[in-house]
Image (cartoon, rainbow, N blue to C red; front, side):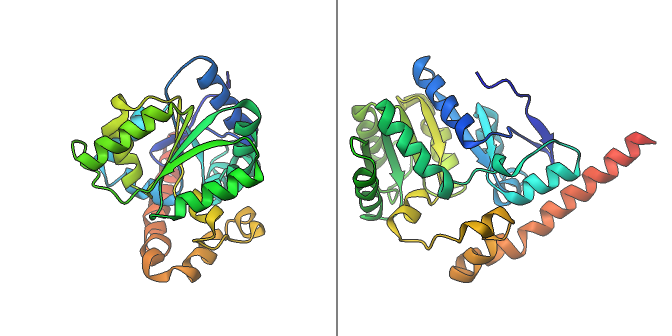
Length: 257
């Protein structure tokens, strides 16, 4: 078991976990037949968390919350937490070692998300790269009402596959809402909120140069490629997070007096 207390700042808590540690958590959930939500936080989820009660409910249910944002690592370090660059884990980097581990250990993976055809294209690429990988998928463009026929059929397909890992890539906050509403009916071990993971694998979304991610500049690449969809997320929401940071600094200084 990973022995590490979560760090609490900006009104949320996160677990500073590296890729090997996250893979170990999945192995533990499989070995113990546990159903664990392994979520993540970035600047966008931070904004949503403070403005969406359902997101707060979701994160309250999560067993582990890794960091998917270099700015959150930088802020944590500024606040005195011993965080490292490798503890920022994004699915662009994690998907490959995760699939390699799944192939070696025989973990079955079900991916729910992406537009019709994109998930299967990504899954085929992963099967070719990792022979023996057991992965099934379904697109995320369904009626997500819990009792709709599409949703019931999707949950039934997941359970019929008996996955060890369920990756839900519908984007925030839809993926978190869907997991929260269907959690009790899902039969799996690790549940991952994976965003555009398979879109990157399939080439449907351009992959940012990895050096940009290491320096916290990945947002700039994504904004340049999808300005209409992402301008609010990257140009407005960070000001909300900056306010949270200043409030935290003010509180720490007040307590020190």
